[in-house]
Image (cartoon, rainbow, N blue to C red; front, top):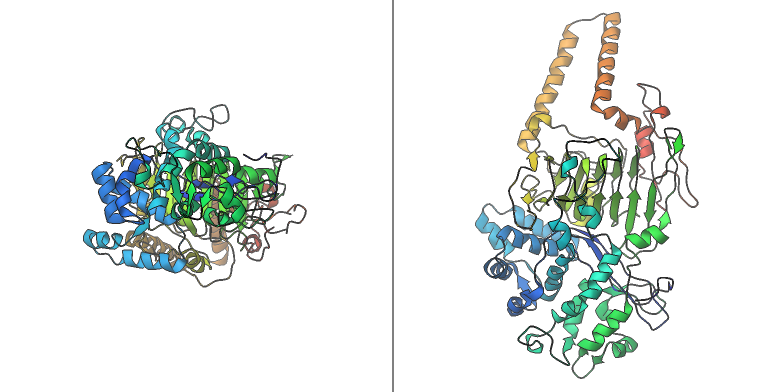
Length: 607
């Protein structure tokens, strides 16, 4: 592995154990004509399966259809069909598709009127066999964290906060979860590199015990499949290439044992070359924290300066590898709408009592150890993963939503795949997507997400061993408790209502509430109050309203919309990030009508 101090990018590959949120990256390298590799990163939360599936899948080369995978998974591996589809669908979600393809697939699914038609449409879906094998093998990265998600030391610890009813259920899964641990990715790939390469060998090059025979060769097609896990750059360039393109260069071919005669690579030499070049992901979370651009701003909290940590690599990372990390955002409203945020992988870590609006099309989002916060997202191409959170509300349109080891969280989602409820959850609430902003439908089209199918109310609950499991960890939001959400920022665009509308029961509840308001207004009008009476009545209503705001906790959210004076770091455009909290920023009961407009950030130039 190259020395971390040697920063010239050479050839780097990422090992991408992708299942629920993708975060990709490359590497730092060495001198010219040398190579380096980096483990690619993604949000994963599925149980592991043995890589020896290859013995069954070889008859399905080079493409594996859903019907054949279902036969293998359910008949040979004894998986439930829901779990088999979860693997298959998730892999396809992480496979690059143009938005038009995803929208066409969504339209085909939405037209299915029965299970038979749905099965017929699913039968048309196929995936790259070798890449799918690698994908399944990489699930072992999280085997330990899945089995320990119901036990362990709670977070936050009792020393850090007062006890809550959910404290006994909180788990340390996230602290052990390796999805965002670059070193864990690297170590896993290094440790299991032999197995990963053996998965790609032809059956004739395996002994009866399943081990590679001497002088085994890896075909060029198999090396191309490794591009699902590994990519990088060569020489002193920074352009990232898949592995097979890097190995199209003559100097690297020689080092990796390429034979022009057989058009294949020596397994032994290829493995040795990869071990020499594999290194930490230069576009991962660790690198972003260490060398990413910091967005600095100060906030007054209880008489002292408390600074949240926001770092990004969007100025240097290739498409798919952009990372924005936001940590310890406390009692603030952050609003962001920028093309530079588009396609980024977002991680929100230990945010508390915050209101965060990221209104751009995103690649993936992970919330880790957040508390008492509301997060509103633009369309998320792959997945939104909520891990070890408490009392958090997430509003999103996403390819997939997953929640693990979390309590008292509410999800308002529009998603074509069943929400994935992992072990360790308690008191979750699932509700329909209930908001919009002007550019929402345009942003959905950019990432290939449609309004149908929408299965937000049909979660798949997995037990500690990864099998489908029924429990009472969630409820569907009762229509009587439902209220639409208004995003308080002015932006450009044509969307003026919730895409796809509200489900009938929730639409009816909103209509009934609006009717009661109209009846109340009519009652007041018919009372024929004189001017002084109207003034007294208005004052009483406002007083009761402010009392309700304080009791319900909504007062803080309104106060957060009043923008303070921003402190921008060097080269940072003021207004690029909106920090708009402090009760001291306004007088009691008074709102700046221009506050939400200034907080929108739609004209910002993110740095």
